Length: 370
Ligand code: GLA
Picture: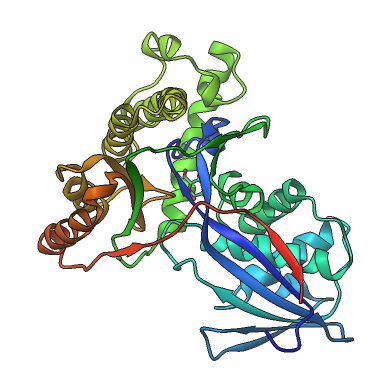
């Protein structure tokens, strides 16, 4: 890109399994995608950050001494929040021109916001001549999402966006941030990403509501079991537990069982057992639908259409839910037919046309001098 000094990218992500457990201290199993946010950046010798986009006509200027003031911007709030919290963490912010080019579809559940936050911080750090520390960047980006954008998220998205590795999924322990890179070897199967294309609304408030429910459940269970997070509750302690009822019981049941599915998915991936991995995806979707209630008609119709296809070993929603994408494990030979027949069935059921994305499993942050 003409005239810019650095090109910095951060990835979108899929989550293979381990949904709505990151903020409960559980293990998750995401992978970074080739769909990413790219920032072209150059210093401009002022105390302003000038933002522009390849896909939008808008231009926004941020004053680096007033970064706290931009929370209500339609475009630029993620960049402002990221710069604000990076500065707050003690880093230098240099006035610059930033051109953003995002190939992660917005509202897709593939973490476009994390890709924007992480790439913005990585671009600012690159400009200041800092050595990039992807884990630190992920943690500050998470604070930007929480404290600036108001979504009380876990660490999964920002971690995957920053620390992803081509060809690998990350088995990330969200309590300790220990991460094992596991090669994604799906044999005869491909991971297929399909967007239900239902417009998102109220996603943030519903997300925060689920999070509050699990926090409240933890307060009840902490003194009874001596646990510090819900992921520490064993399936056997949970099945003997009488302290929870109603929705709160359902939410915790999802968390406990989803954590167990992640363990089994790890074994299935490592041993190449795609049938088993597929069954775990189906069970995860069912639990997110009935116990955690974060799917909705469209994601349910899309997952059901996928699951009924003969080439599909399993399918589930990925990300926060209430819209966005499914991830399906599909026999490579059957992928073309899968895409066509799922699209037909889904559109018939809901009236929405789905989109499929061709993406590979890629690195998290990349930075190059132009
Ligand atoms: C969103 C959040 C993540 C995680 C997922 C659900 O993507 O940003 O932290 O909680 O939802 O697994």
